Image (cartoon, rainbow, N blue to C red):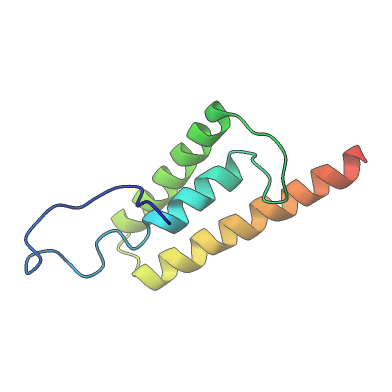
Length: 95
């Protein structure tokens, strides 16, 4: 069972189809950037809040530039890949 991270309340006919599509990927990216490893381990709430701040500023910047949703998905995916690669590099250095 999954729970949505937020809810958009409006008439179904007035709600844009793309409303909330980025919510899940933004949440996952915020957690990954916030130094919580996808491979297990511990993290902190402050790290997650820092990751959410980074993702929010990044997404807002793309929207202000007028980027399409596909480019936003692609660039957030690149952020996730970069965060996982950095996490792996740190894990190898500490072992």
